[in-house]
Length: 231
Image (tube, rainbow, N blue to C red; front, top):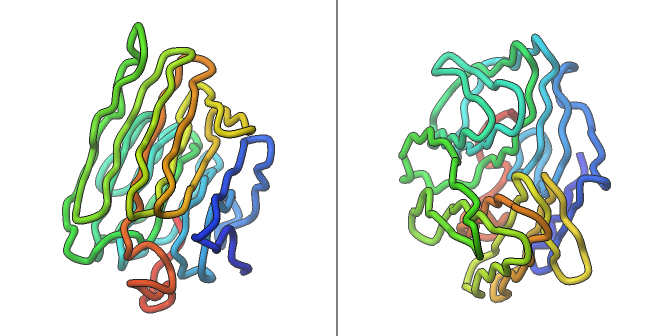
């Protein structure tokens, strides 16, 4: 499988109208590769769609998994998760995912420090303010940080430059970045040392991620060093 958006020294951006859904190892599960380095064992950021009644075999996440449910219901032996649920499964965790009604999730694989053992299930329910914007941190470990932001129309959100790669995912609404418009499920990644500045074009909710150094292939981790599977 070819790498996707694998030059982490360059900005990457994908709007929903550019999505290309491709098969996974399970015929009922398809995905959009946002960025990916590796084959079926990969450092990966994806959108994944489960058809109704689909199942995925039991597997372990050697370097962790985080996901956000966007539509439908995603489940495993630990629970069932509705839209707006953010989940972190730590390194070494194991599950057997399924979806009875079908679902779409945003998911990141093999991007945790081994010591980050926090299991997390949290509703991303930050309300859009009447004016401007607001941000709430969900998780932080070493140089990784995950936050949810909500913005009213015309609000400008600025995420200052830092020493790490930053990402934005549009949960709903739409933003303007540079000369690009990103609607719901649009994704943006900028290199270390660059800020992110977006303008909300309508009431919008975003997930903001400061990507840890271990999640940059060729740096602190090797994408093929341990067995894993795509959710």
